[in-house]
Length: 228
Image (cartoon, rainbow, N blue to C red):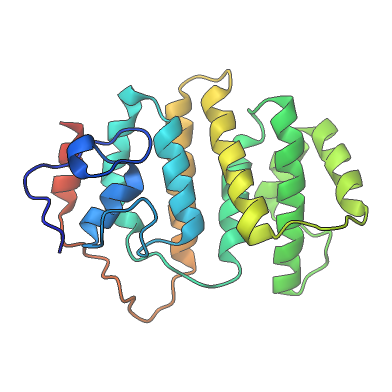
C-alpha cells in the first residue's frame, strides 16, 4: 500500500509527480487501488482510463470536484471482451456528436460508423445495422453522416488499428469537443459522458471476481473529501 496518509490529493489537470502536487482522476484511482502512483494504473480498462483522464482535464476547475465520487467505481473495471472498446467509444460519441463543431462531427461520424461495423461483426448481424442510439446521433448531423458513409465505403490503405488508435482519438475528440461546444453547462455533459462510459464498461466485466476488489482500500467518503 502506498503511504499517502499525509494528504488527500486534490483533483486538478494533467499529470502529477506525487499527491503533494495534486492528482488527476486516474492518479487518485491508483491511490485508492493501492497501486504505485500513476495516471495509467492497471486497475482500469485502458480506454475507460483515457476517458477519465480526458474528462478530468477538460472539466472546469469549478466542476472537477464533482468527479471525485466516481473514482472508486472505475477500480476493477478491466474487462477484455472485444465489445468494450467499440461500445465505450460509441457511448462517448453519442453524447458528443449532436453538439460538437462541424469539423469534429466528420471525425466522430467516421469513428462511430467504423465501430458499429466492428460490433456488427462481433454480434453476427448485417454490417449496415446500427445501435438505435448511434443511429439517432448520426441522424442529428446528416451532412457529416453522408460524408462519413461515403468515406468509410472506400478501401483505405493502412487503416489505423481501431482499439489502439482510432478509439482513443475519437474519445479525446468527443470530450474536447463537448468542452468547447456552445452549449449550456458542458461540465454536466462531460460528467454524464464519463458516467455512461463507466456503466458501459461495467456491463462487460466477467461474473468471476476481479483480482482488483471493487471495495477499494480507501473509502468513498475519502474520495468525496477532495471537493472540500
